[in-house]
View 1 (cartoon, rainbow, N blue to C red):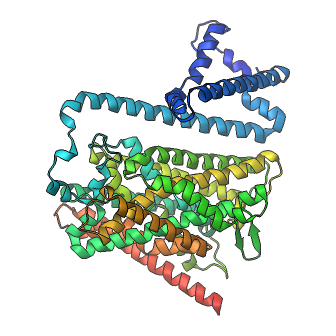
View 2 (tube, rainbow, N blue to C red):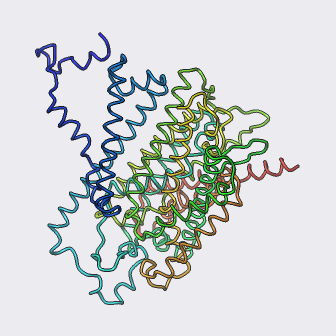
Length: 586
């Protein structure tokens, strides 16, 4: 029986072996339902942007083109031997065409499900809010001035952007928190995961990712428990309760260094994708140079400047992190698209016998010593450092205790993404894997579809990085303001200070990204110092100090082990890097 015959097999035993044929009215309803999904929600906004007549014209043009494209599909389906979209693409372009169609259908439908869940969540919340409106909202302007002046810095998240809007902001949702945490985690770190497999081998790399993920969840649990037991709502506040003002300043400095370093990393990666990179004798062209040739306007400096002004600047001007949940959802979807396309290319290469043979365990030789293996640890630590956004995201939830669930879901999702991209990326490029794997995708492919997939991988992740940028900028900006202007009014209420800090951060991160060429050593620096402190050392010391008397014996043992592991690996990694640097110079 042919594969297509499977659609005629009865669902229930005892029924007729031949299913009833579909009807035209049934087909009309099914097609209409497929079309009228979440897209209908944004049609009025299109009229708002374009006006009535251009919007109607646009809808008519797209409708006609859709009918024409379906006519093409049906004509080639009837003329060929296949009965699926992927089958038609396979007849035209081979297995790569079929795989491309399947990957795009998965991404498109998964994105559609995310949009529908977001709309359902919004609708259910609005219904709840209407029922509670008579007692839950009140104008903030009725509060005395000394009340708002004494609020914690995190309260700035609830200040409205536009005058005349309801002063009490909607609480955040668990799905929104999951997206924001996942976006914070899956930043630039994912680019170096395949290089970790190149250094450690497959099994040690997977074990390392799993261990760091578990420790990250444990450390966040320490933070949230001491936050809820105390009187503060910030990471710096928890450290202040445990170690005084010096503890708070230490956290703020580490957050500033880590997040500013991450912003620089993001811009370096975007520059690599758009304008390429020179590594010794190797020259990797960016997508703009491959598409349009080498010109002044697609140089690294100009391309990054245009990206900052047109993409980053509008997003970093939002004053509530919850406002970024939709861009975070898109960013997470782009990360999934990146992993899906990369995995698809690796599977095709595996079938065709073109993959590199992976090493399952590290190979120690005259080039690689045992201590060199520890240099991979800081990269994974940096990839799982998101603790600075736990409080801003968590305290915008209706129930801050839900943050623990959101963090666990986000960590599980991100660990899976890291496993997948690490394995398939390493299979594709083997020992030639770059510290930024996007650079490897500048290679020419044997087919048009392969070249298209290479471009899609680089573009999708560059867009993902652009949408992650404002999430980290939010925490960085808040900590700088709290450190430099502790007695000033809330940052969200002071437009001048808000804009100045935002612009200064953009300018300095841009200049640093132009000056720094490689991300690997930058990752090692952050993962061995400030990121390590934020992720493991500070939460561990909070549990050991136990200023609130809530740590158990088990908590203190775990905290002590976590601190010892962090310090030992950090010292070895830093020492090895210094030794290697001095040896290469001599």
